[in-house]
Image 1 (spheres, rainbow, N blue to C red):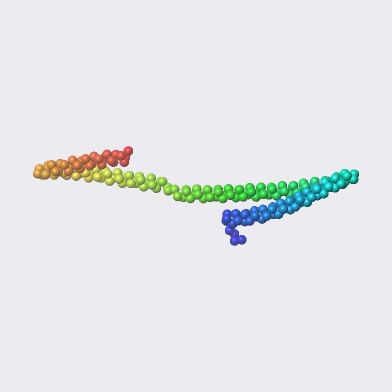
Image 2 (cartoon, one colour):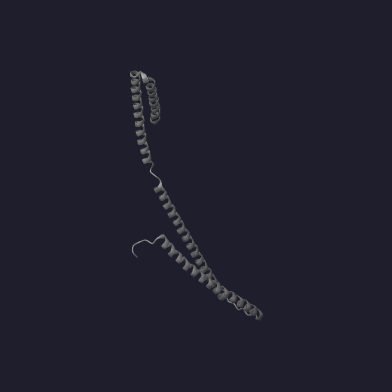
Length: 190
């Protein structure tokens, strides 16, 4: 052997082969038992015939010893049958245990695969926090820039009366955008 453990498939194949051999031995034993039962039945028939003849002529054919030996033979056959049945039950139990072990291994492997597939949420949470900070910084910068645009356009409106309405409109739009940006930034900080 090269030091490697047999795979579950090899172990299962060897086990199946052992079970097949045990089943074959059991079939052969059953055939022998059936033949013994036939012989016993024939002996019983002969015995009954001899009993009839013996009674007819007044002779006792069977002795206590003969009956005892026949009873012992029948008990031995019954013990062999029980041993074979017990071995069959043990093989069935071993087969069930192997099947359960295979199910347990497959279940454990499936759980390991599922656990490996699930993503680590901590990285996503950390990335979301960083993005929130960046978005908040950008929104605050936008609000400051819009305030600055409003001030510049207010100054332009004061210095250039010919385009005053246009500059005031742009300044008001910039102030509204700055207010909205501050409202959005509050949503990120709450």
